[in-house]
Image (cartoon, rainbow, N blue to C red; front, top):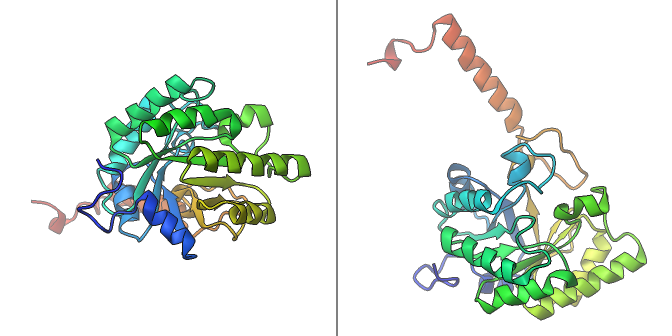
Amino acid sequence: MSIATTDNPKKVTVHTLENMAHRGEKISMITAYDYSMAKLVDASNIDVILVGDSAANVMAGYSTTLPITLEEMIYHAKSVVRAVKHAMVVVDMPFGTYQGNSKMALQSAITIMKETQANAIKLEGGKEVVESISRILSAGIPVMGHLGLTPQSINKFGTYAVRATGKNEAERLIEDAKALEEVGCFSIVLEKIPAMLAKRVSEELTIPTIGIGAGKYTDGQVLVLHDMLGITQDFSPRFLRRYHSLGDEIRSAVSQYSSDVKSGSFPNNNEQY
């Protein structure tokens, strides 16, 4: 699949996001991991769909994003891409597929793009992953960066608390953001950092910033679909706005179905052949 399709002018591309940011139009981004949900999301005027490594949490039940494999990410991404006609599809590179080895990073990114036909990849880190990003970009693969709270580094940080609250870490984050822009990232996710720091980063960069728990001054926002729909209910950070309580509705519907089966009221005469 061409990164910038010409036969479908409504398809969101890297160029689309750049233009949106330059004219002050906010970018909406949400996660999806399967065909059915991706099809609904894509029909909802979302700009970017992230096939996040958060699939490890919400789809597989792991406590961190670390266990998910390249093959599992490819499975989820292929399912999403088959459903999407409008949004740009970005795929997370999972832990262990790019850190410390730029040749492996390039091969991992190529494998993702060839097998999924997604539009871009995303990876976590600053200056320490610039070499990997450079190699990936040399193959013509768009790269979205990710700074601040980087969940794949949870064992290093030891906590999911807000990052870059101190001056030194804040300055390092700004330096990392500029390094990612300079190497060629088309956008950067800023996760769980102070709003005013995110504002400063967004003002000092020319590429779009996408926030999650980073306040209102970024060029766009991203949330995990299962969190904002209330399907996952044991995760309630300050930045999360729940737009629905599907978890409660699903439990109620399944409970009613089970009751109807046991009582013999399902199926009724009109629900059989």
